[in-house]
Structure formats: structure tokens, C-alpha cells
Length: 96
Image (cartoon, rainbow, N blue to C red; front, side):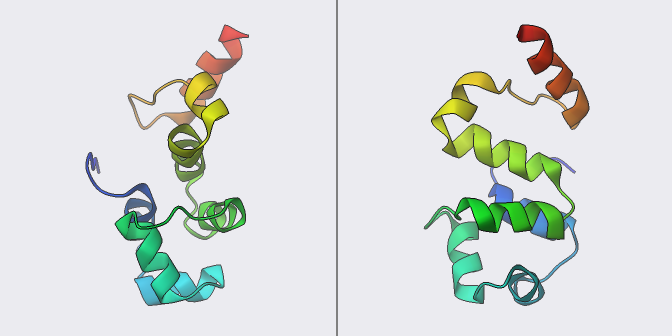
């Protein structure tokens, strides 16, 4: 399912089939904090994103987070044009 304008954190949660309340509980954060991340009001800290990757079973979320919010990620990680994260990793490895 392709979402171009939706927030990456919300997309991953919805794809995992979780409500905000259940996801917040599993992430050990408040529903308000999750709402703020999903609305773009604040950027989640790395430890929360790491838990999201695990809880949502979404390595792609970790990749997208680094690509959007980390200067090194923006510089070194290739854009994902497909849903194929392994291919993107191989492309990155070939570059180095």
C-alpha cells in the first residue's frame, strides 16, 4: 500500500494494524506523544523509533526515519523507489 503524503510513523502503525492507544502502550509512551509524532509536531527520539521498528515489524520505518531526520542518512542512504529494502541495502553496499 503506497502512501506518499502520510506521516511515516502513522503509515507504519496503520500497516501494523494497531490503534494509537495500543501502539502507545506497546511503545511505552503516551498516546499524546504518539499523536505528536504522527502529526509531525515532534520527531520521535531514536529509542522510540527503534521500538517502533520492532513493534510495527517495519525495518523500512527505521530506514525512512534516518533518511528524513539524520544528516548522515540523508547524505548516504539511497532513496527507496520500491518497497524492496534489501535491494536498497545492496545498492548502498555497492557504492562503498
